[in-house]
Image: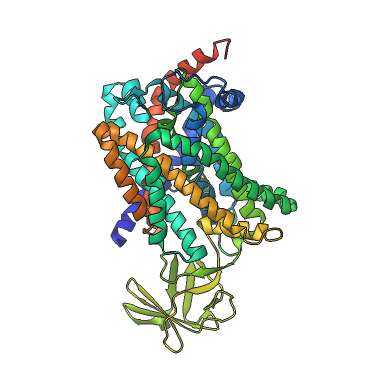
Length: 546
């Protein structure tokens, strides 16, 4: 497992962090976003109102080819984009890149609106009909049909990476984050959470795209409104901190500073790279996944679905991710210790022992007195923890030892009795950080506000997995034929369960690797087909009835 983790970490660095001075993947995404924005006449701004008109059903025609209406296509795609990236992804970006990372997420979203318009318009233009009357589309189809059979290798490469990415980024990461939150908040075993969420996902996806569309059209508005209302309440309570927080985000984007406890790297390239990376994960612009969902929309005008799609990065990143980021920054939760249960066996906990703690090469012991380590440091997400306690009320300081023997971790009191879990002040990360920020922000009016995040994580994760199952099964269909869809869905459900059991580092890193590959293959095709997208768009908007 350690070797596998090292390989994944190496691949992630090549894709997202090479060269170190200015990562190539960041350059490619930003370059195409700028290029297509200019070529299409800043379509994300000039055609935003038209997108709102289309999504309200003004142009809906039940007789048009397709499986779902414009609104259902939007909510299906949004259920995949509005998810863990909005909760855990923003927190990860701020933890590692500092508050300035949120600014680069905004930049990614603005450029991403034009990118998503382009890829969805092309997906509608080159989609294919299936034997059962449904339709399929996405990058693999517009690559092969738009660029010709000589480019089929690129279509196959995208489909392979999409099928794997659906297992990981859109599935295992979701299950992993839900399991992490449930374990942190309620000490529910990850195997129990994994079984419950896998069962819910299976109940929906085995019914196909029409059932997925019906579920997401109801679930997405509900979960989005619930989460945004909670965030708005916090920002109103802390209204005096909102403008200073915005100022901190903008200033740190260009001059990043590490937090008092070591949060954020203080390096511009790292802040920019992490913001773009997490921005892409959140709104999926350029990744090539959303076009697969939008291909199923009922319409005879590809551009109409394109203008619907450009709304996604706006809703996902400029609204919901901004809410999350402002809550985390304005409450100060990003750079402070939070009282939390800490499982010493968790992979996010690391130990640094001085020479006094090295008893044998395979048996290290970290001693505690009055809750403070005496012969080393105990880290949580790479930052040292505060005083450790043995009870949830934080009244009994830990006196004892933590024994490290290979992969085994044992926690013992002074009388040698074993302690199952410890409690302490930790700098949170991921979804637990967002939960801690909501808890702190809503404390004056609603104790237990962190549970809003718990509910949102559960709903977001399940809905994201539901939509990603469709992306993956379309990729499997392209590679192996129509008969492979059912077996892909069954494997998808199994992978969801297993995702809850993996370590969060491996799941996120592997997901980022496949995400980067998908984006690279797709952006190459979008560059090559940008002329076709321009012609389709120009012809549509020349119609005086639009």
